[in-house]
Length: 245
Ligand SMILES: [Zn+2]
Image (cartoon, rainbow, N blue to C red):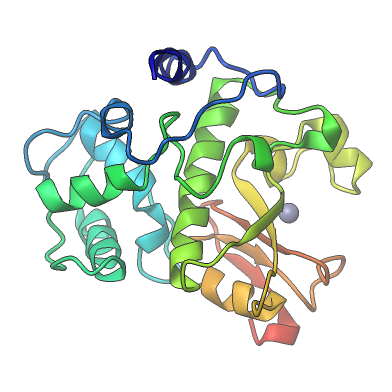
């Protein structure tokens, strides 16, 4: 426990790199550590602002209305109200768009000690051609939001395991897998998914259209027949003709 918290503290400070040398313990019931990932105390509602709102926006970014991409500006506007409402609905809470004790509690229960969501890790999203995570704190923050959106996608697909094949890639790795070397994966804002169990590429693609993504590429788009790419760029470019998207 003591070591877990120390590791979490280091991770929160952004000093931990993901080389595979340190196993960050994930204890879902460690509410104290999870709570250390946010500064939520009093209820947040429309017109609230600050760091507490920004953290909330990161964690409910998957639940904005379809076609929108969450702006994490720390201002609780209409988009945040809608996203909180979407989150509450998805988890069986009263959908009033106000973030209070029950919403905070649910979000914390979904949070690992390193502030990522419980079902996804930095490591699985930063294989980076076998090098592990090589980015900086900006890439890491982007990747954390990407993982939170993956958690939302997983929930929308029935809370069954969902496989990530690629997330953060440095420019050299991106080029070596056929990318431009400067695409969305090099920012940490993109994740590639593949189906498991009864999932299909198209079921992932369709769920992704309701998950706060600006970029979605799947079956029918060149070189995307074996994964679904989703990112949170601010513009909207969706292409997966074989899935009707
Ligand atoms: Zn991709």
